[in-house]
Image (cartoon, rainbow, N blue to C red; front, side, top):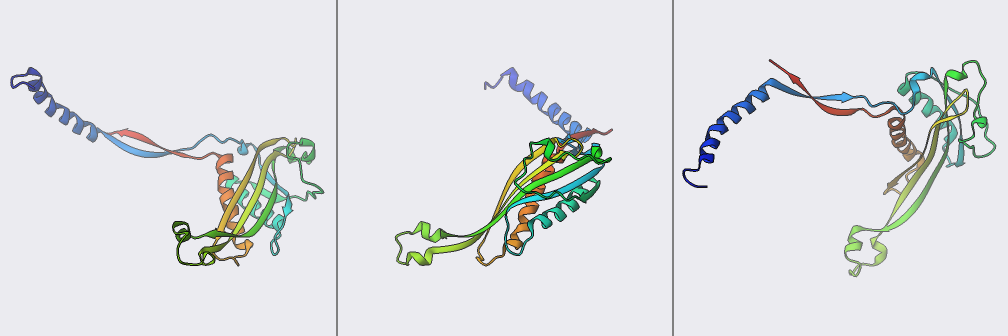
Length: 224
């Protein structure tokens, strides 16, 4: 830039003005984080009652009554999340249910038109898996025996199908399959210990999908 360049002189004049304007703007606005509720994908507010059906249990694990545990868990969680009455209903299942068949779920009670029905299927499995340690992967040709570089882990998997249906018509409003897995260094870890952790993970995803998830957005307040 030349010594007598008029652009340089103009820049020297504008810089203080710009700095002053920036300070004035900062003092005139206040930034806030506001929680914006998202639209609910499923119109649960239209229903006054929740019915929890029996779960189809494909594989059970010793020491856990999956159907009973799932029904009790979801009755409490749905009542809390939806703010509505939730009750257990008897729905004996002779075979794996078809959630896409309205006739299999339609109920004709006087209050069923204002009720949501939760139905589902569950499978809980546990297995012991062997894997190489990180040290073994880094040094497969090391001096130690390979057997000493192998560790065993207990892996517990919960496969869960959840469906929300209109009790009066049997039509499905929402359905999703979940597969939650957790591994433990303790190969004697009982599956019951992992079950509720895995169920909690599935519940969070389910409720976010059904109820919608609030979002944080920036808002600005103008102050004098």
